[in-house]
Length: 283
Image (spheres, rainbow, N blue to C red):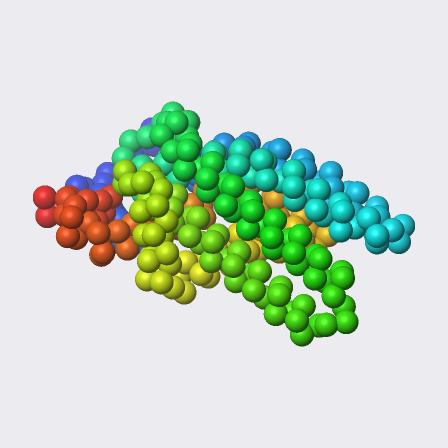
């Protein structure tokens, strides 16, 4: 029998393959840590199962009401679905606290046992996660319930209805992005919640189109699919279950870039470029 000859890699080749930019870190994780990211997505989604059950149950009732022309019950079903959604969203955000902490260690290229890091992240940041979940849940409640009310009961004023729905969407997008940026800070710095939120609004302006497009094509798509019908709701939940860790990686890398430029460069120079090879080379 012939023994397979192993490919030899020189030190210079190994070093040249190390990521030197955050874009390279992103694709390096996708290439070499696919199963870790998938497992982490599953861990996060476990905390969103109560929310999924709520949405599926009431989605079925709403579809049945529409099929039987019982539109008078539609708004009530939407209202109670979103009301039950609030505590479910808080539970889900506990999972996001663990996800953001585990991803921070991944992008820093640190050795990690993601299950241990996941639950450690929840232990360290559960208070802020509860507040974030409540804020995001109330924002989504306002968007869905308020938007449904305007669409159902204001058909004679399409202009004002459009303005109202547009304002609700802008409010939801703004607070949704701020929510994500508070998570990236919670697992990085030890600030009070007020300082963290203030910084998040500042970063929102600095990151502008990058984080906006990330939110619209991830969270925005999932929420949009959930609002169409029963089938698209299922598609949205499956997409979220599979890819949520990748979205967390995107938010984390974009945030770390801003942290280096506007905070670490002045106050924590040792943290600038953490996880990138060029920092280790300079050191």
